[in-house]
Length: 555
Image (cartoon, rainbow, N blue to C red; front, top):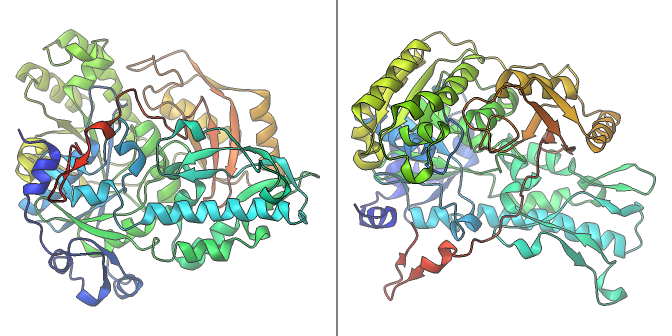
């Protein structure tokens, strides 16, 4: 089989104006970035604001494993399959982060014959949104350090600066740095840090902002530091919010691209699924709902992280009501959860499957706690046996969840037709979505609700640092915000080695921070890496450009 990039480069793309016409978008409502990409204008948003909303379908997954699950591939394939069965659908996806493309993660544009195009552009610079977010964040940092240099009227304590610089590149050498060296003219020396752009609060804000006014308001609310007397310092105190908004004026507009089968896809935003809520922008999702009968979107990692945050944070802020959840799993990943090493997951092993399928069971149960119909989608591999697939199907039926096989990687939309029919049926079932906790309860009560109801923990332990941070956030009057729990994606617990459905454990909260502009409290249950490094043999080794200007080696 051809590689992803070979498949993508052989595809004949429609001009983006023709893709837009499928959604009744007029040419003058597009801001073109070449032939195959465009931003959707504010004029379009205003024109369709009175359109009825379509059905919202969330694609999530079991806990990620080295064996792979394929959420984006399923999301893309499902969108293509909807067109095959005569349904008007649009995909709403996150933009990939450039940095990991050159490391080990790869891109976020799907795979095989269920890809979003032009994949090289999407995985690299796309329309420049990531660069604008990077610039806005770093402008705020520059203005903060300049304020200290120019007399420090706000009495900012250099030891209590919270905002970090960012870069959309994996570079471990920048995790911990010292700035301001070289004498008085070069600033006040202090310790500083870099994070990857998608982990920045600016990214989270862009994805939750309803319009340019809301964007500016949220940027101004970023808690950047504390003063020597312990008073909070916000970005608006630095007079940074206006200039930051100016840098993001175009980035806030969603991007329109297409799949291999010319299904419209809106890609916009991609916050880190631990530090933030891990889904595409609220504006993109809402636009998609107005433009089509079905909006298919996804959230990062497994349902215990991405879906929980999508439902408890994004849907709460956006007033969204999902009609169905698609839960992606693979035979290989379920066997891995049952104790089979990665090298052996292609071999039939019903005993391991029976042990590992409990992970799928927990995710089904969790999604049903939100009162939303669940469809299990098995992302099929050629090594899956009939006996294994039948076992999973029977298990899902016993759990009261719909089930469908999907072979969209190899067969594109055609391989997802059964899944598409199941999703349409699920969307017609009764749905009474509600978040699993109220904003009126305390921060600790919110954390404990998620820990017990979603992770299956017995309780929560708090370090002294976490207790102090919670008290500080309460003092600032921010304890009525939703919580965003940063936890390992590999386990339902906070221990990545505990696979399947762990029992008899407590979650340990190590620290808590306030993302005041984004509008949530970040809860750290482990060491969350916000600036990845490159591996011993980075993917960058394989990436090149030939004499015709064609990129090679990109997946």
